[in-house]
Length: 284
Image: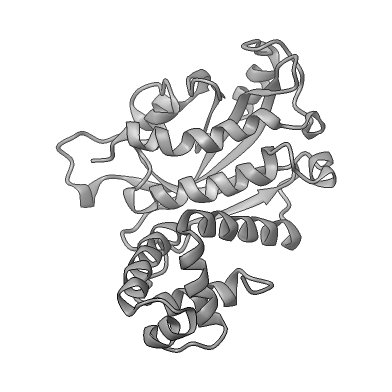
């Protein structure tokens, strides 16, 4: 069972980053808690049968408006935790980490001005648990892959984001072990994704990962990228004891398998090679 309170503590920092949202993103400026009813109605009417949406207050995680959530969950969602509890546990940590990286790039006050002018949002593919009962066996619970698109909705008088718009569209049924579908993208209002922005997301995710792992883990990954083949060689190169290297490598693997659930990493060297091949334009 997922502890929702622990999950909330994990996502609080990434939600807080929205406070620096640049008004150039295009969200209308209104006093806090003010919702344009006509705009919301237009959006609600345009939803397809396989879609649902809500407006969330980023300060307390409460949903201010929702459309069709009861159709999929058997009840109306009240806060973001109601949704987080329904994300497949094998993907939850990855969702939080990838979501944080996307928040950094789309909602940070340090966002590139050209990206801001393009009205950037982000989307993540996640497996959600739809209506079931506590007695439903885990292997029979109806998880479905869903595209989540997150956009700024309203800013307050200080140009800080207070409401965000989340929309969801069902793609296909989730099959156990099928984690390769998970991905995150930064996109424009027209839905287009560019290679440049995708690379920015991957680079930022890697930066966040190194910050969480710490300097010693980064040194070990660098050592493998620079040619070390074994833990003994890494220890000799860095001047660490072999026990120290092995302990740090366990931490690297734990985080690697949480952040990239579609991969199975058994060695830190393997993870370093994965980063070099799929994420890094330059070495650490």
